[in-house]
Length: 443
Ligand SMILES: NC(=O)c1ccc[n+]([C@@H]2O[C@H](COP(=O)([O-])OP(=O)(O)OC[C@H]3O[C@@H](n4cnc5c(N)ncnc54)[C@H](O)[C@@H]3O)[C@@H](O)[C@H]2O)c1
Image 1 (cartoon, rainbow, N blue to C red):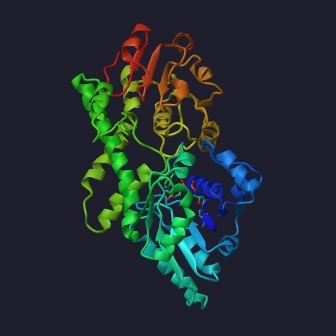
Image 2: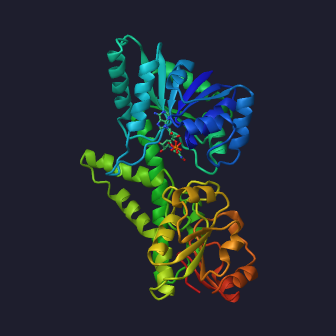
Image 3: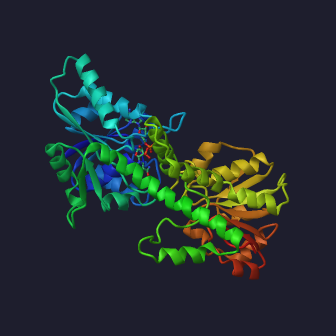
């Protein structure tokens, strides 16, 4: 089959590459001409395990094409995916300007029936807005006899394992009331649906809400666990023991109950906010979600509070080694990353940062271009040199079992602020470190 995807970011590029690998011919459309030019040269604009090879294979098989021309994208096929960003508006609601711009582009160039499938995370009712935008342009073109159907097909892939998730999804949610659209999508996703039925068909509004409900549920688990961690710290309990104790209950499970520095990334913060705002527009007070959000905001400052306490309220002129910049491992995405909140607080307090991350150095450089109080280091060891303490913000595997003697020798003071509970407090004490973690006694 042939399909076009508008918006070649984490979702669009991964889905296009995975669908091309399944034998479909995909046209990738993006307004970012530089991104398209780089992709045509075989350069992958994001870090995602397995993606580079998959894109190369798709291109060499002639099944993956790139263009910045909306017209070329629309004319290529009768299936148009929308996978553009839906960033927060000033008040936190989802900004639909990119989604609606694509809808208008499709209407501007379509010459026959089109299935328009929204993959972006959008509030309930967006399919109606997309439908209205397409109707308006078709009317202006004098082409209101052209037919189209708007469906919802939210994306559940995770950054860091996006290729694996998109290749073997847990479920494929299709929001449509059209049997033709359902059949088309079933055919498109057939290779992911062979082992057992993963396709869940529902009405469009429920599909739109399913995506928000999923992200908000996961964010709730994280904030709940961070609340328990803060309580454990004050009550003299060990949150890691509590985590194992509750995770063993199958109704709770071990996933998403790690205490830490709060959730970040391009999805959870904006999706929780957007659902709160959506609820407000219908006079519904989303009390649980508001608590989830405010716990998360506070959690991002937890390491800084511990640092200030340790250094008796003054870190001016001090240098901090920082391991881990991305909002989670296996991605270079730094949107809403807790590391940024920590770095910015340290700079404001007059401290310097020597940072290392296995893949986010380029992204950090792009965001903080030559910040005078930031040194980007080529290795995790280089970041330690002469620093007054080490802070750990992301649980990359390479930080889990460091050479502790080397670590101690490189640091000016043996102090570790661990936002991911990577080490055993008792062993850190034996090794002679002052060790702060989340939800456990300080040693
Ligand atoms: N990143 C994730 O892990 C993830 C997971 C599931 C769902 N989502 C949702 O999917 C959507 C896309 O997220 P993303 O992370 O891939 O975004 P992204 O920011 O990585 O990419 C969006 C792309 O859309 C392009 N774009 C903007 N306007 C366009 C237009 N008119 N025509 C063509 N291209 C245009 C941008 O240039 C950009 O390359 C969002 O709604 C997001 O919430 C993201």
